[in-house]
Structure formats: C-alpha cells, structure tokens
Amino acid sequence: MSRAFVVAGAVVLALLPGSGVGTAGQPCPTVSRVARSVSPGELVLLTVACTTPLQKIEVTAFGRSIPFYEAETPRAWQGLVGIDLNTKPGKHEVAIVGRAGSSTFTRTYTLAVAPKRFRTRQLTVPQQFVTPPESERARIEQEAKRVGAIIATITPVRLWEGPFVPPVPGPMISPFGTLSVLNGTPGSRHGGADFQAAEGTPIQAPAAGRVVLAADLYFSGRTVIIDHGLGLISLLAHLSEIRAREGAHVARGDEVGTVGSTGRVTGPHLHWTVRVVGARVDPLSLLAVLGPKGGRLPGAVACR
Image (cartoon, rainbow, N blue to C red; front, side, top):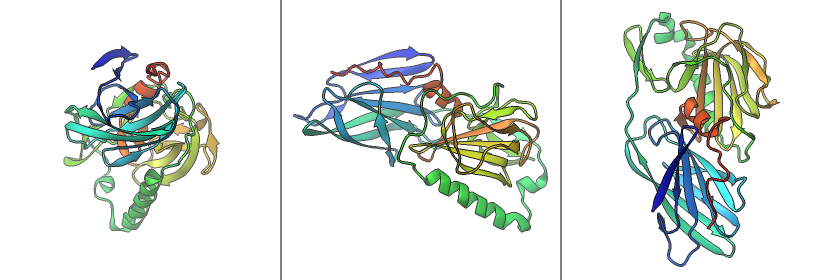
C-alpha cells in the first residue's frame, strides 16, 4: 500500500507499513522517495526510517553503491539515487541492507523507470571542435581521464548543507539530454543544461563543497568542478574567468567565476553538469529535489 503527494513540483511516494519486500521477523523500515519524476536523467532522494535508530545501512541501485547519510528526521537516513541518461525503462530494484537496534533487515524497493524523449538541436561550431586536430589528441585524452577520475571518486562525507541554488539567475536555454548535431554530424547527448547569462555574469557555487578542478579544458573551456561529497559533483563550464582555487572549500553562493564563451560554444552562457555517483542527472531535477523549494522534506516520512 502506498500514498503519493506533491511538494513544490517533486512527487513524494511514501511506503506505508507492510508495503515493499522485507524479510519476515525483521524490523521493516519505512521507505519513501522524493523525485520530480522517475525517468532517465532524474534524481531520486530516498529516505529509510525505522522505529529504532539505524546503526548501519548499505544500499545498491543500478549496479552502484549509494552512500547514505543521517537525515534531519530522527531515526532516518537519506541517499541520492541518480537515474542515468541511458537507463532503460522498466523496473529496477534498490537493495537495502541495514541494522536497527540489535536486529538486521533486508529490503527491496522498486523504481519503475518511465521512458523519456529528449530533443535534438542543430549547432554550427568551429570544425576543430567536431574533428579535433591530431595535435590536440593527447591533451583531450589526458583531460578526459582527469575529469573521469574526479567523477569516479566518491568523497565519503557530505560537504553540502541546506538547499542547492542556481549558479546564475538566467533561464535554462538548452535542456539536459538534447542530442547535438554539430555541423551536420550527430554527436553525443547533452550531459548537462545551459543557462542564459551575459558575458561576465558572476557564477556562484550551487552548494558547499571542495573545488577539485579549476582549469582550461579543450571542449568545456575554463571549467570549475565542485565536489559536494557523497558522489555529488557540479561541473561549471565555458567560463570567461575562474575565481576559484583547486583544493579550496567554497560555501553556497561563493563566486567561483564569470560567464564566458570559452571551449566548444556558439556564444556566452553557463553549462552546468551534475553527476551523482557517476550518473548523469538533469540539474533542474537536482533543484526540484534539493533546491530552495525542493524535497529535502525531513518530515515527509513518519517513523512507525
């Protein structure tokens, strides 16, 4: 049995006692989720709560280990599950193993991923960004390895507190997941979202974290990557100026750079990529769930 309700555009599905799959004789936790939708590219906030304090919890979803942290709600833990852009529609199981009091429990929670259609866009860019010259191949490969290693690193602690905020005030102008056709050649799907902003507009950190990259890259131009902890990463690209230092800790709202048109672009804007334990997630989904009006919802799950 379940019940659903909507808070600030994010759908909350609370599992009532007896729903889901548990192990007989074990403490059966209440599991709930907050999500804008359950489809490729979306973020899901899972909450697991018990009648007794949780000492340990291990969660696996989409073949990835999902880090959990203590929620503001007593006796509850939360974790962020990213549904990658390439996830196939259908039922996907989330395996939950934990210890509450002196007992252990196992639980299977199902995410029914719905199909989603993405747009196609036609872009004209300098040809060297479609077919880079051989002289740049080593640089591109080195930069890809560096960024890949950053995304694969899971910082075991949560570095952010409170809601995430948009890095610039402008509207989104190029959606997440869009298929880019560059100079008539189909490329890859847009792994982030582009936001309208004039050259030189200050860019703020969407949440607290540690700056793990501040460099000029071939495709994304001047780029800042912020590690928010627990596998949650923000990449801010095409900056005209970087105002953050690698290794530095930033607070939500700190200026990390200014909007520009460096790298593979057609004009000034901000590109914001979000990764959650490696999964490609729409930044607008992150804001829907963890934004100022989003679904942290510490009171959404009643301990039973």
